[in-house]
Picture (spheres, rainbow, N blue to C red):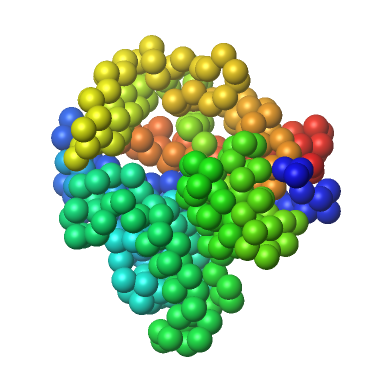
Length: 344
């Protein structure tokens, strides 16, 4: 089975930014100020023509990682006009399907039909315990919840319904099982991987969906700067903190050993096979070249860059948003056109 899609399926690639609202003690600011500033950055991204602002979910992080992305998405929707409003991701297994259907519909209504609903199964045991939900059944519950949300929208089972029909749904899954599930459910795959795309496309066929409708999105570990070397020294402490907190909390509630701490040299190391490093600080042109290389042959619709990493200084965040919104999209489009990477 081919993992490729037809050449007629070329489409523009949107470049967006993801916010997780972390507020680490080392760089802590008052919570109301932290949220207000993030909304200002969303407005700035909208004014500058970004393709999307995206919000993600975790619970029980000591730095206050955003726990309710749809709530924040509603606020961003009310403060913006054109940018897509996305989740990357919401965890449907932690919610009643009717609650998720209603909350997502409200965001779509407030935004005038700009919602991109990314959904995932999650990977942290304590989060499932917090909501009294069986971690071992997370994939089954996630698939069932997605199907029920669709049914509620299609049958008027909740009111009012969303503006879009259908609301674009994305599966934020990183393994073969999840990629196949996203395909069977007819969702986009929120993971840029040639290997996983093969499983995803097979799932589309299994679910009776047209494989030519395949679509891909993902978070890419990139921050943009005019002078990457100078910016790196200021960004790396935030990335070291972020990555080590992910690693530590990923094993919480399990019998897996605590992984070793990473240092700045680990963050900067780029794999020999050319795949993404943990973080790459690049100029817009460098990013366009790098991204075009990594997405060649995939029907990518949304690229999502970090807007802010764990309390990163505001001036770096503002310039990153400006470059991602105003410079990267045209440079990437030109690079894809020149190489033919926009088509398969």
